[in-house]
Image 1 (cartoon, rainbow, N blue to C red):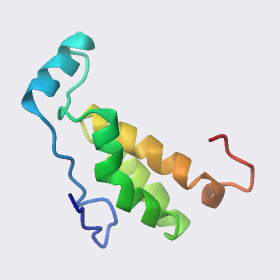
Image 2 (cartoon, rainbow, N blue to C red; image 1 turned 90 degrees about the horizontal axis):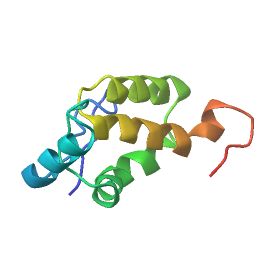
Image 3 (cartoon, one colour; image 1 turned 120 degrees about the vertical axis):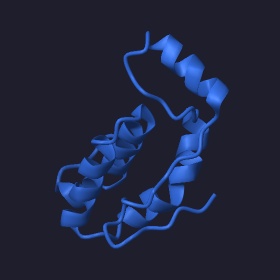
Length: 99
């Protein structure tokens, strides 16, 4: 699946999940979080192009993208926000980032 990057970079990004996995994940976390139902390997595959491209974004766009994704209610978007932060940590700081 290809995700388009809009002028706000992450606004159009959408993950596609599975209803069965959605229920399992919700049950696993005792219904503390809302889920789309996409497992980690598939989530990473769906977000790969955006995360890769984010390394070329200005810092302000990276920070806005992380915030926008993390504020979404579904837990998988928060994981994508963390993936985005890890992928761009060298852009965000001069310190060496852990893998």
